Length: 328
Ligand code: UDP
Ligand code: MG
Image (cartoon, rainbow, N blue to C red; front, side):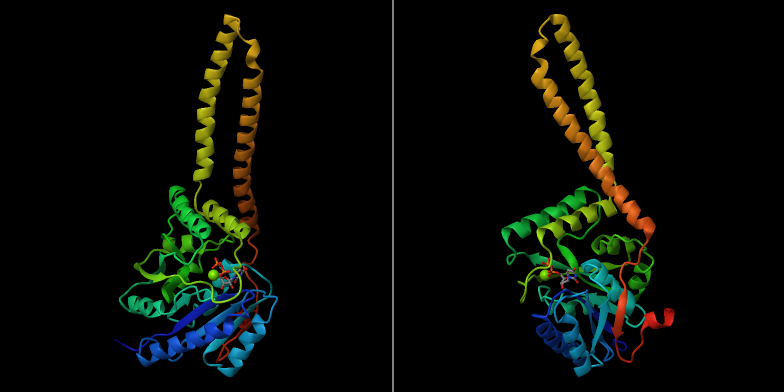
């Protein structure tokens, strides 16, 4: 193999004070072994992205950086921007200073030992390596059911996502450069990356339980994320409305014919319940249809505003190259 290349890890952190020390320790050990095996360059780094945490997360990142400046770097976002934006801010910050980047959650649910296989696959010529969960034994039944249902539903809705792959993935510098051209504000990275293309493959790992702390993805956020994923990647719901509208029109023609026949036949006075049912049913259907259209209009609204997806307050990195300082 030629000279080892530079690997940057991007780790989004939102209120992760309980796990950061352990995550940092394990990543350091992993990097050391990869460097010893000449798989990655000594210039490789771990970048923690503080996503507007309310706890000590940022000061821990600063401490880690001070103790080991040529290994731990940090990005401090100006406010909480959400997991996807935090990941993107890290990737866009490192895209010109690394050869490959891996994104991983801070809570050690993603198996660090998978990194070896990811890097090896990269050297085999893969530009994207997806980390795929082989089992969900540690998830609750509810989480597993909703999560797997989500992937299946995404497929049905026409969005190309890798089954059981979240945001644990390796991307080459080339892919990061292309990702930078996606200007959308409503981010759904696991739908965007497959769109980029290039040679890719999957590596499998068992997802562990959260090392400490609580999930930052309550059901409400998960639902919002799923709706965002669907409406960002598929217009099928809009087409469904048209189909349902068509079917309803046919049904209504039948209903009209039936009511005329009933009128002529003289047995029409018992129509109250059927009238009430159809009013409620059609009213509900119309509201649902409006809601779906509204989702898309809301999306157009936020896309045309094209607000920045994240705002970096600080970037601590040795030797101190910050792309943000140069731009201003
Ligand atoms: N996270 C973030 N910003 C947020 C919410 C979460 O950066 O607004 C980070 C969080 O610190 C973690 C990762 O995103 O590293 C995934 O979150 P979590 O583990 O809570 O989600 P779950 O695994 O339960 O789906
Ligand atoms: Mg987690």
